[in-house]
Image (cartoon, rainbow, N blue to C red; front, side, top):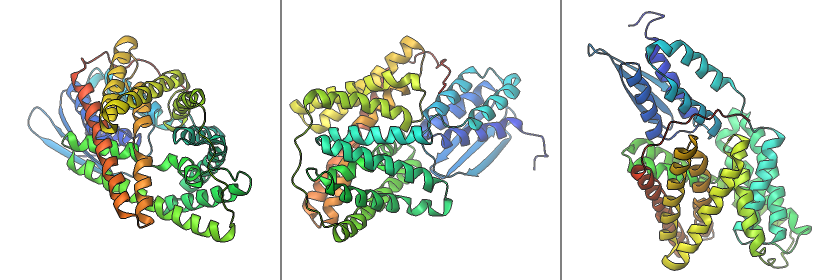
Length: 410
């Protein structure tokens, strides 16, 4: 057994893997970055990342190997941290820079999230309002969706501080959102309640997680991909249960009938909402504020290509071409500016993910419309696969650009 004070490098590699995992890095990226840093330090480092575990095996020149395992909780995505961690790996020059890297890693993980409290609530309200427009809702759905989204994010932050309630948080939050959306019928009767609910709970919809899971499966990370996909399914199931509970109690307590859906927002408002969606992603992804124009442009690019291609060749082709174009644009952005490709790729992919489609399929199954539910769900799986394949193909074909050098700041 190693004595205390030995093996600083392998402990640092494990801490790096834990930090990447806690910031939302997918398995293939976590394993690649840990391997790259280990190679610069003169050792062979192999990382194995799962949704609830990371392990690092370090082999030195003499063939001696040390394996460290760590159980980790499922964490939210933090783009600012991921950018800083990628910069740390890119700037690591060897074992001589280990002490400086340890200090930097501690500072990165100790920094507070750039978006929290009322700022995060505002981003949640903007996210839900713009998503209501993307779901072809009208102004009443945008207003009610924004109100529901703000309440949802407020409850999300409150429950995140109560570890014992975390397992049932999706049920509680979605039930609250359904109750609130039903109550808002008394003020805005001309709305589609399901659109209001769906836009209000969009923060927790695991469409992005499902797409990451399929990308991990495609890259050979079978355990991580399967675990992440199972987690996304359970989250969707719990959200559906919460919406069903809230809608049932809401209809019994507040029996207000809708007066019919409002007209969808005009086309200029729709595309303005797409750009505003990109701005809201800055807070949702915990990205630096200066990334807002890039995020907005990525969303507009993604949906413009997706809708144009889908009109001619179908939804799956539209998703594939759009994902390929967004990933290629991210690589071009990194090559031209030296900033991370994720600033373009992640918001653009988020605008395309089919989480809401999966939720609609689950809702159809809950209402015992089995044929429609299976049809919608299978379409969602194919769309998510097309997104993952398009992204991986573009990243694989693109030349490797310069390492990220921009310093993230709130």
